[in-house]
Length: 118
Length: 492
Image (cartoon, rainbow over all chains, first blue to last red; front, side, top):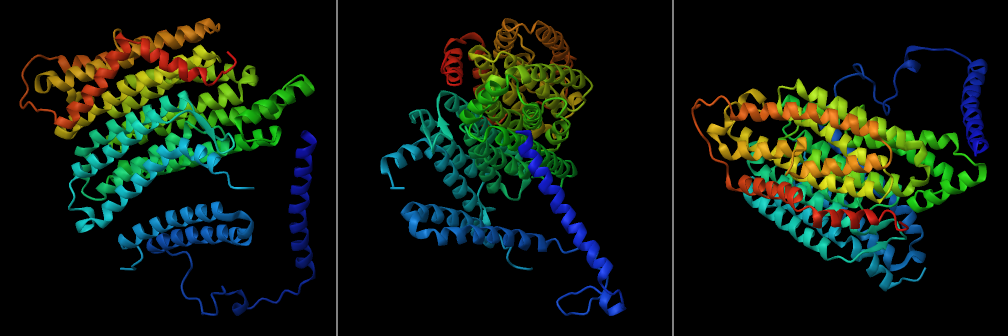
């Protein structure tokens, strides 16, 4: 019982140690030649302006939330699609129910005007 | 796996009331946005009536559904589940009736209020039927996440926003604590089903002759998680602020339905899954119950806001319920179930009185209740009955409820706990009686009497009838509680 958890602890220590070790190695071996362009933040090729610690519009939050929901849906759909042949009608109906629950939320948000920026 | 239509129907039959209520909740929520003027043209009463229809149909459906287990034994529909589902639905019913006034004043999102209430009820109904810890966890989340929103419903009000935020943070922490306990249990017993956990703990004990140290840790985490959900001292810190800030009907709902559901879940987890390891947790439960009774009752004395006072009083009440949990047998479970029934009517009734008062006076301060009997004798008399029931004075339900839990504890040798309970009951009587004294004295005539609206009168009458019936004719209700408790201990 306790030894089972010891294995977990060893795994944890080795895992953390490995990351630290590789970081340390690259720190030792890599050349260090900083310049302002290298140290600037990479923003999809755009030149950054202003600090990044600004107050974001709260509307982003709604979109982030909706994105997460559909992201989770997609993750859930992949294994279902792969095992679709062997799962049969039952899983199909279950998935329909799941998607209709999500659609319910989407319809509600849409009707409430949350998908409009203004 | 071939598709078995008979098994499929047997499985779904037990969960159909929840499915129905879920669909109904969706309909109410959708009606709120798709009817004319995005639902703002619909009157609050219309929403309330449709919600009530859904709740009543579900209540009848639950009563008619035959017992059974479903989904490989993770969901059980037995007498315990039926009783607590009806308690939850009763709580929702009274909440909906009493929310008409407060919701009407909120102007925005009135339909969604009732929809969310129903979603939360679905979570609680699943909670009392879950015999698998992950299902239990999801059910708890469904009921609390909706309650976070409902607690912060008056979002322009600072206290309501504070209530919502505090509830989110504390709810999140308590879920994490609970889940950690579940994970440890799973790690040791290899099962998340209560029956499997029970067998697993038995095997562990047989193998080594003692319980592994991790089990104590898991039990403490589970107790702490349940402690947060039940607002048990010392995990009650969130309760007064949330109770004060939330809209009063939601406070009532939080303090009654959500606690009743958590008591049922507690009974299943601790009396079934962890029954064999009771030597590890009974002492801890006794200490927590004593703490809750002392802290709740003593702190309630100094409150000047009626909602805060009732919040601390409900902390104490949950302590009394848990006194029954030191008797891990049918009698202990019966007394706790009976207490939950008595608590439903008394506490719900008390909060409805607070709602009726603040509908007219816009105040929750105890001092403003002065001479209420001259202005609204109805509220004053009903409120007194409910407070006396909470204090445990015969012939109300509270007296017998306290009597049963104390009896169960004494029979199991917890005399000290009963003495603490009796002493704190006296303290409790002091602050309940202070409110009653304020309502009936002084005798001079203040300006302006006010009537109570019809829905609130109905809700008050239902609660009052419940309190008195349970107190005067306890027989059938004790039988119900006993039948429910028998589900936990099939061997006894």
